[in-house]
Length: 145
Image (tube, rainbow, N blue to C red; front, side):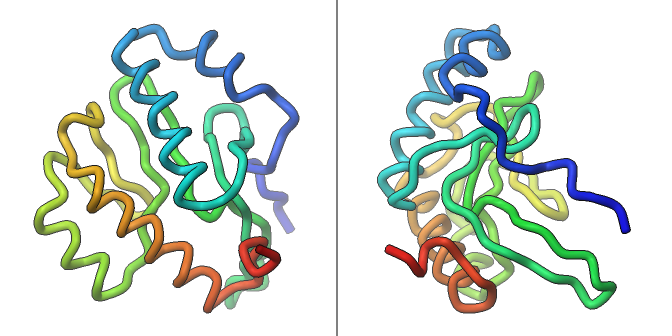
């Protein structure tokens, strides 16, 4: 069975942002996202794989038997845009997207250009709803809080 490439690492989050993020606004938005997600999740940021900054963790197992551990919420300051890993497919989250702002959504994440394009209080609700959903449906580190 294949191993999960996105695992928690010991790389410094601050060092990663300072080395990887070239755009000053994206760097500022990255540090703001860290503060917000730290507050909302109650967890310190950790690097997951080479480019994802995650908070907390949960264990998952698919019907295929593939299993692993992933961050509860997180983001990656990719070159073109941010990838936000904050969304679980709940009815509440679907409605929150109506007033979220400028974004695109993929299968596993939401893409934004900059924080000023979105509504931060809605992002908070989405993050908190996702943490609650994952805590209810998976074995989560947040249960230890």
